[in-house]
Figure 1: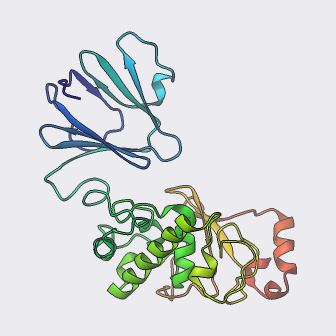
Figure 2: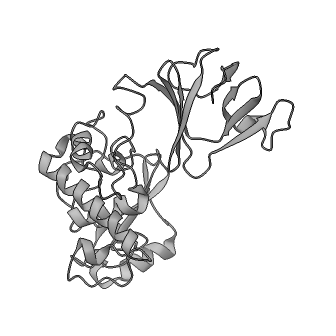
Length: 289
């Protein structure tokens, strides 16, 4: 920090390019998100997720990863900072409310007791892509920090919301219910180890284990008795677990079929279909084969 930028390169950058000569004023880390702030108000945001990392090198020092994995390179007269394999590399201006791919800076960290829940509720209700499924919006850290894949499945189940309902179908009460439930589950994680979400989300229900739907595909739902399903959404390539029997709130009467690239039912092996068809509560289900 405090040194002028001598070179910037990024093959995947979304947004304006930092100008040579601008000074880095500060670097902020929020979990797996790292933001570099220049003196002209431009911010470089990288979301590292599971694969990304930043390295710091002297000029002439050999990189510890191949150049094909470089996603951003920042050079000053003394140092080279290199970001490898970050899925998201974007810039936005500090004074600008809008940015790619979501609007506004990162949302509140719902695990913190002082988190502004109203801010997250408002961001979800006014989400920039109103046609996006709510299951995807909950993973957007512009809405809220800390939810992650496991908790989005548990939150949607706890609220009984259909995971593929578009954000536009949610009203203010729905958004409030989702955000406050997420905050309650995340804060409970700080008090319990391992995670205990089922008993908090659905008091009085009997769930073998700590989670209600995550990792429980093919098992009976503790709330309605239907079979928990799992699918994979191509955008994030994360498994989504949900119960079609009781997660029906805001479901669409006629939903267009999703192609194989967008969603596919997991484990199509004949043995899996036979297993599902032999479940007592699934013998007449059309998806059981």
